[in-house]
Length: 418
Image 1 (tube, one colour):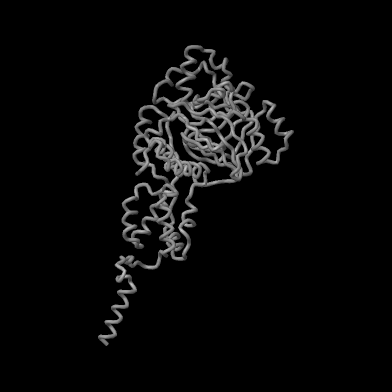
Image 2 (tube, rainbow, N blue to C red):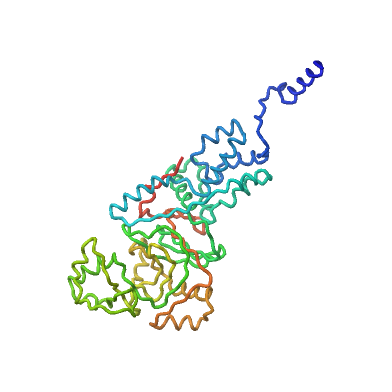
């Protein structure tokens, strides 16, 4: 029996490679296959999805000891970084709060995804590839892949400036934080670029210039679904504009409302009771905590500040897209002139596209409604996702990397977790 045990011991030593002085791989359970381990290490070594971020220490430990206890948490954190980005959002939110206190109207929404750990572990047990496991969490927006490819390419070039790589990386992280929900029809508005693009089934249908919020009255970075279109809209003047612009001008010129085709109503409808401006003590509503109890409205007309058409995607910021009378501003390169809403260069084309694509109206009816001054409203049978973005770098269709001014200062206060 002892002789048999001795022979068995020698066999085990040889089979483990001791005779060749090789270090055996540590034993771990069977959740991870060798193929999955090798594939994962290859992905992280190249950081193909640029999502290792602050997990480098854990990665080094996993290289030394590729056990389930290290590989699985590393995969979960890599997946989380892929889905939710590596921007230090906690510090950014704190800085945003300070900016708002200083009087800057600034909003930047993040869209975080839940990581289904149980589903991922089940997939590992079934031998699913790591690439397939990560696929559902890869940002759908095309700029993620395009900017990532550019980053990897430039990183290989020793002449590339670290500042350039840093800026590309920051914009890549922003693409990860876009609302992951996608619809057949998408509108992307890139604020620094002052440009909007309509996509259908991932194809670029239309692109045009836009006018967006000033540096202190910023267009929010967020996502919502367009549901309605108003033709020949009325303009309900926001209370902030009433206090900051309308009342001061009215105190200087009692005929200001009439000259600008503005009326006062008890509620936000032209059918509500009219209020005589002469009966209002305008000066008292300049007080900071005194709210204005009425609504100032500009009725539909050829000269309405909203133009001929208004595109509505309900949101808590009261932001929408609309036509404009100030079309000359589209000739300027940097178009940051609005109070936060988005003025579009091609309202007619956008209106026609949405009406033909999302209603039963024919071209003749669509044009007739537009040419009249009669208010017309229709709902979209298929909602359109609107995403406002903040990309200071953008790879165009010709493969050229375009750079835009950091007008809202986000490049300075958003930091990537390294």
